[in-house]
Every structure is written in structure tokens, then in C-alpha cells.
Length: 227
Ligand code: ADP
Ligand code: MG
Image (cartoon, rainbow, N blue to C red):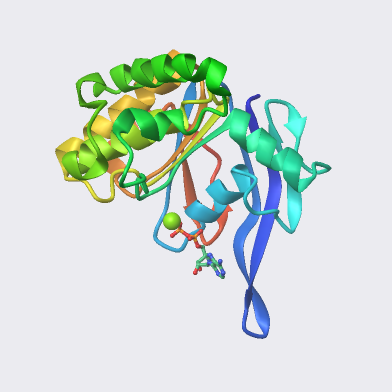
């Protein structure tokens, strides 16, 4: 199993008490499969992704990436794990304004000067996979919202991650462009064999997923196959 969350509980400080954002959540995502997570605003979807991304340590429960339990890892080891095994796509593309599309990807590759050519080739290959190779020289302000989100997705794949975590990638897009981005994520999941978790509030996108998990008040209903 590429991503395994087991019995995760996460609380946040909330004045005098604590707010339970995730309540004994268990989720397993095999490689090459897309699990959609849906639920109302504030139900814990982004918290779930942050725990899966090892950006937040839960109060209880375990996270394993690629069979590696993350519990005993140091901060440095977690950063290393994220760099090599986890691709993260946040809601907003947060691209660097001064860099071209290709350069956004190249900065992800921690390769020395010797391998700069390889990073460039990989960046162009991924931009091609998301249908943007002819836009490789453009900067963010020269791209549409949908194109920026596709650069964002390509960037998350730069280090060939095992796990791909995507948080509401279509919230700034119209329905048609949003559907195209979700289709793209589904195709890349199969082609690159990532264990993908896609958070969305748009039920129209669920047909692209292999499984759908619903979250309410921090509780995850067991994922069910789509169709
Ligand atoms: P969703 O992504 O489904 O909208 P979140 O995971 O962002 O939900 O939030 C779940 C709950 O946790 C909400 O009640 C939210 O207000 C709360 N929450 C999220 N992040 C924090 C934080 N850093 N500190 C305190 N409370 C938070
Ligand atoms: Mg959220």
C-alpha cells in the first residue's frame, strides 16, 4: 500500500478546549489509484491532506508512505521523504512570478549543475504530459488559471512521487476547465502509478475517481468504489 493512514486523530487548540479536526480516520490508497475525498467546508479535508503529507503530526494514529512508517522520523528525514515521495498540489498554484513554466519545475529538482540538462528534459516531458510544452517559456501572468494549475500539477510530479495529494485544484476554475484538470489528475495517476488523494467539493468530479470517501465532522466514511 503506497499511503496508509491508520486511526488518525488530530485536534487543534480552540480557546480553552480542543477542536477535533480528524476523528479516528483510516484510509489506504494503493498505487495507481485515485481516491476522492468529499465533504462540507470545515469537515477536515485539508487537515487530512496535511497529515498525509507529514506536514502535521497527528495526536494519535500512524502514517506510512511507501511502507515506511513516518512516526520515528526526524524533521530532516520527513523533509527528505516529502521531497522524494510526496507530491503536493495546493488550492492556489503559488507559482513564482519571475520563473517560466519550465523553470517552476526545474527548481524542484535538487540536482547539481551536472544534471541541469536532465532536470530541463524532465520538466519539458512533464509539461508535455499536461499539454503545456508549447507554453514552457511563459511566466505565470502569461498563463490562464487552468494552465497555471496544470503547471502546478506537473511541478508536483517532478521528483516522481509515490503519493500525490491534491487539495481542491478546481476551486478557481469554471466547470469545464475544472473537469479537464480532474481528468488530467486521473490520467497521470494511472500513467505515473501514484497513490492519489483528491479533495474536491464538486460531486461532478467523482466519476474520475476509483473510490470516494466522505468526510463529515472529521469522520471518514469507508471509501466506496465509484460507478
Ligand atoms: P476543510 O478542508 O474540509 O474545509 P479543514 O481541515 O481546513 O477543513 O478544517 C477542519 C476544522 O479544523 C475546521 O473546523 C477548521 O476551522 C479547523 N482548523 C483547520 N486548521 C486549523 C488550525 N491551524 N488551527 C485551528 N483550527 C483549525
Ligand atoms: Mg480545505
